[in-house]
Length: 281
Image (cartoon, rainbow, N blue to C red):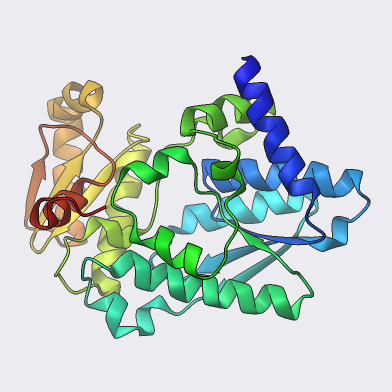
């Protein structure tokens, strides 16, 4: 607990040194926590107008997450900008190569940095944490190249730390499952398009409505591969639940519905990249 208190104080100290800040706000656990702490710091300094939240809006971001950002910023009275970021106009993104996340983050942060500058804001931060360094994350390189601040990482905060502190702060997102970009459900090398993204989002909303909060539906052409935590597999295989899922996903357009017996694991599709590259980080 003492270690956690020290990490939070380090975060607060770092934020207090900034004269202005734009938080890249996705509505997830990390960026919500970062924004909530920043609000308190800037309120204490009497500089509420020097803090803004900027949310990227494109078909790769779930609509539910966008609604979360709108609700939170309204409740906290934070100046909030939702901006179209245009990833779908980039051939480098749509071709869905192993550097897709780099291309995507470059586009997003270029837009956010420009809007922040136009608003008189000198710094941009995102919610990357210590645990994000343990996977293949080319988007982090884009952030580093553009001098995007990473206050949670600098403070040494892990995902569990952030969830615990978020719970203490009574943030509704403290136990929110990770969602991430919908393009992460499409295997590398398979072209990204609006139809696929819509099918993925609709499929995951169906699973969520049936009680599977932490789920993924991977798009393999005519086949949907469902991932839920191992502990939820028996529930999904209950005939009444399974039949609902099969029927509804077929209506969406999938011909074959499968279940990944390994259970849900974040970054699953990165395995192929890491295996081919050996020591690729």
